[in-house]
Image (tube, rainbow, N blue to C red; front, side):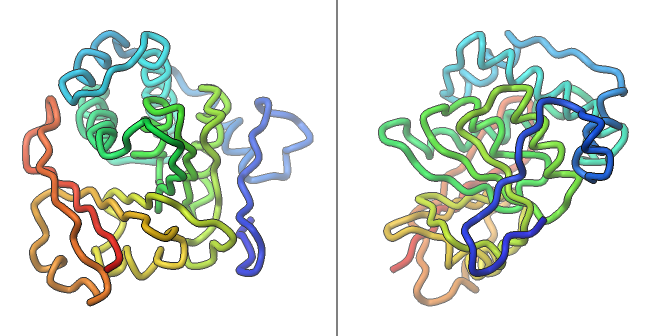
Length: 249
């Protein structure tokens, strides 16, 4: 279901697992199909050690939540093709740790309203919602199977600080966010254009990029400026990674 332009955002409702009365609902059917696939393991302690290299301190419970998230992603991916990355080690480096590298830009003091624009399989929103339980996360995507996956993760991990919205960004209305973040969503100019109406006064955009996108920076609209760029060093991940922090002039 898509949110109507004139109404507040509508979250995909969490379910208590598969229920027969949801047999006609596409999201429920996706949950049932994925539940039969085998699970894969990952060492929760390994997650915590690598997160610490990023300056992110996680409790044992949070590390276990992230391990379970990886299990769910691997299981669902066998059925629904949520990501082209299929090896556990690559998911740890390219998805989990890469997502957590944004955490230091979201200081825990105060409650931030954060939008993950084009969240896909919940990256970076779900790992950040686990690591930063004091903030409020909204994860939006236009693809039903991805929203079904994120809804199931939200349920199984008990993420009360996250909600899932099945909608296109330009059709989302009724909320303003302190931070709007994206990971490989679009060019910087398109990212700003798609989400400008959702940014709160004095809010920030944060875009995750590989190489510093000089051409994209030059194409930003005149009323948007670069607050700063951050060069990232992600454990186990080779290649350049950057955060681009934008704000309105």
